[in-house]
Image (cartoon, rainbow, N blue to C red; front, top):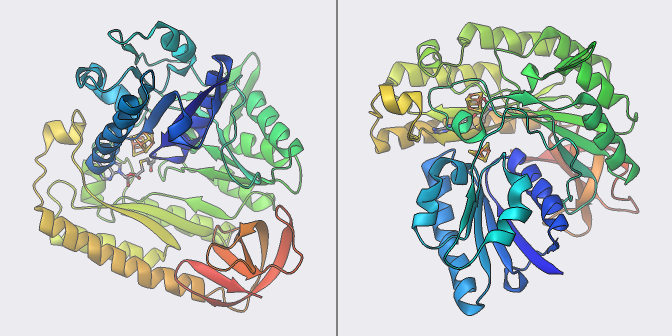
Length: 436
Ligand code: SAH
Ligand code: SF4
Ligand code: F3S
């Protein structure tokens, strides 16, 4: 059998897409390898979200081409969001044999057959209905405990800074029964946690003859697969997360108490310009609702520093919102202008790099302090952890996450991977609970 090697960049959806790609490549006679040196097909599943994500790929392309030089016949492919965004510009480099966008993975076997040295192949057609619902992903996680399941693809929002609607196309929801079947299937194979993935899971809506399933209902259906199968999901959109979803979480102990709720900015003026369709007050109200129904809910977020025309006052509003909410953790970025987006076409990227970075650093510093506070507040509590594997630092210790998504380490004793243990938090860092 021929071997395929894929490096994955970007979000969890891309991680799951790589698993779908391996399944499709299997039909074309390729098996998965983690060693580039033995692969006859070397690919990157790419991300375009920020400029530095793409810069990394250009570097990897040179490394892939060294393989091509050393071993004639090796094929190099770029798939995913950057393939969709740059299309034949990637072929023009002469370094790539194959360019395939996120909705075209089914054509991989055909394209691979058609490649000749002077005939690279490309398919970047976006689809209205492709969800890969019938494809069983080849799981690439290492522990066999936690699986990703994509429940929808694309995005119908047009946040002005964001390239995703252009690289992933329109939003479409996957057949609810195929999602439940996939959850049953991984559970039968020993998995204990599924994470339902979509750019905006709260707008999940699948309809077929006489049946309509929204996200709250889908959560219920997946939670019903087994009481010891944990259910997680990402990403929630503040404008769409409903009371019904929050209540459903509160009612099902196996739906994990964690919501990733990207705020992007604490300034209503910036949020308007970002086209997020909510304001600061709305966001704070959603947080209050979550905390009233699920007091122990973990909350994490994404923040962008230095978006177009952001003033010091706007920036301080982001800091004050973060202070007020107290997120457990955050992904924090300096604004990166993306070609073709509304922001790139309409607003100058006018915050100087040094100002953006200073603001980003203030945001990071504040979040580090808040994370430590949030983790410290857990000291003395008993938490239930799903054992994921040995701790990276100390082989005598195991690690796993609490329901609220906080990482825990605790003595291994004779505990087994994939079981639930109750431990007590005795200490912490700003990213780990140290338990006994
Ligand atoms: N669908 C999710 C986010 C997907 S992208 C949502 O709406 O929240 C992940 C994160 O990348 C975003 O939340 C945002 O914080 C960040 N991001 C997206 N575009 C960006 C850009 N042009 N510059 C900097 N950060 C960006
Ligand atoms: Fe991008 Fe906005 Fe869609 Fe998230 S909701 S993927 S930020 S356009
Ligand atoms: Fe990146 Fe595409 Fe995901 S741009 S963040 S890989 S949807």
